Length: 400
Ligand code: AMP
Image (cartoon, rainbow, N blue to C red; front, side, top):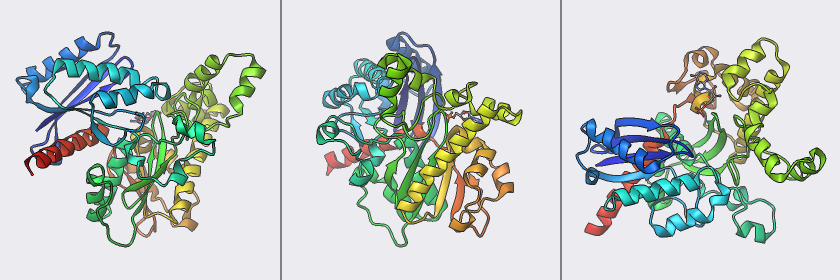
């Protein structure tokens, strides 16, 4: 079973091809194009490369194409991308203007190009569909809630990967199995006592933190849009709702300009006034730049705020996991986030921390009650696995 995962950006197409002869999945091929202006051409070139590499002879050799779709009205999980679902994505274009429109274009073009091949979306919101309502609602009137103003949570593929892999590494196959089957059985498969509580920290260009109890997310620091939660590379993160009308009035800017500044000139970029990249900011901070240091301090404080929130909500945690560009590589930020938490049973091993970069491993002291781990994420593999599970379950249902 060969599954292509297409990652469609506003001007890019990246892909990975997996083989699921074995259920864990094996990467066969990957590639991508930047500055795409003609998606039909980019898709043709992608398929030509996969054929040239000898992985497929025809489009029909693909069991399915998977997409890491973002958000749709009243639809989540891992689903076939039929016209009903595409319409539901269109209805929420306004909530994900940078993501939904290019995905809709790309998915329709794949559909025209290979009418017989199943197209499947794994929505980024899917991992939060079982979260308690109290963790997902904003305190707004019902009419606001009815139009989608609520915490949706994103980075679902990444946090799901961490939920499954951390359970495996912590010896909890029961929880890992529940995570694997999550979108098939709605998390109903039973797990043993005691509970496994994991806090997953996806720290990268966009950052989010999630609490996971027994494989089920209880919330996510990203809310209605990927502009919330921690400060991002150039996007603001959490902001008081009154700040926007106040800035519009006081700075004499339009609402559109305020939105542009909050999504292009804020976050780490806005705080440091230098760069949206942690590497540049860290070098500047090390040379004494006060704004760069402040940017790092705000980022660390926000990460601790969200970790603390889920730690408290779950009554503790067995593990805290770091992933994505910053989480996998930035030793000093992991140390700052975990500093002075011995009283909560969180004890980093500085030597293990320093030696673990872009690699999987424990970074806590042997006696630390809360285990600290680094796990490189693999979102495309999660999409491909879910697509293969969905397609296999459809075959089982048809033959039953
Ligand atoms: P991501 O969006 O997951 O690619 O993460 C991007 C962020 O991670 C940027 O702030 C980078 O500075 C940081 N990052 C990514 N790779 C590395 C690396 N190899 N070493 C240090 N920082 C990195």
